[in-house]
Length: 455
Image (tube, rainbow, N blue to C red; front, side, top):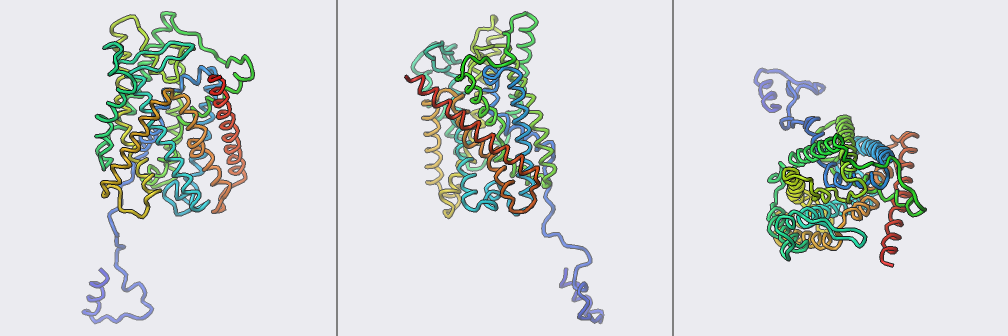
């Protein structure tokens, strides 16, 4: 356009003065590329809610068993508020700087060490999710491991066909990994699995709805268990056991590794903060509903994975079929979510270890090696640690609490852009102190419990 305008002026005999700076400018501003369509707030709420509501919903009822109804409700609300504050820190400092990723945000404040710390935490969290998915699938299909003081629960395959070697936990999970997971994780483009988030929200709503109907029906029949409003404290050990519920809820609310991808599509930091607040309120309501109704249904017999409790006889064929459908549909859902989480985990590991190598999708040998190693490790860990309660506590006490609270709080305290207020610094310090104290107590309590059980 500039060239055309200059040619036309010369042809008409016009003479341009040296100070006519705007003469060579086009009459209308040029657009380098068509404006990108921004994501809608409703779509972002759906994506954030899908990220939050995963396997975490399965262990929420067990936290009510440990804490009691009122403290559990208070803890869910408190963690949701702290998560909202941490996301607000992340978006404000991202908007003030030049980063577009969580690792980039930490790199601005703490250099290479900060970005690597985020990458490692994301790897631990995502790998933990893959292991938890396999554990839940194993619980649904093959039941849980019987404990010395209690009886184990049968899985769907054992209820339908009896107990055989081929429906044991190790063999069934191996079959799922080889013939279901492996073909899915070999996709090199995540677009092939784009409908899984819709299935996730649908199944979560269906799951809560069925539990609600069953609980209300049990209330009308007078068959519900009497829930404890407050925790039962018999000794000092039971007091410290209360802290083991905190990491479980922290893990259930950790979605910070997806804040930047979704926020970039929205374009406005204020919209992302609104999205997070709506999603947190929605998920907190779902968590408390499933926790309360699950606790009313099963009482103190509730397991760390509530799906295991649905193998109990409901007294009718329809009820039994309903129980099996709930468990089987959620297991199928996790099979579809598995490759998506694996996709980001694999990319993160490759970026950290092979940043100077060609793209992972173009290097078949490296792609297959990483894929098989991650699958094998997830399978072996799921067999070795058959209880998701301990894994939720481990993740919530380490990588998840770092991603959710410690890293955002550290960014606000470091304040490389000079935008933190006194209120921000106080809240950041409180988040970090509470995270470190509760995580340390939870880890110590778990270690003490494991040692005590072995002795």
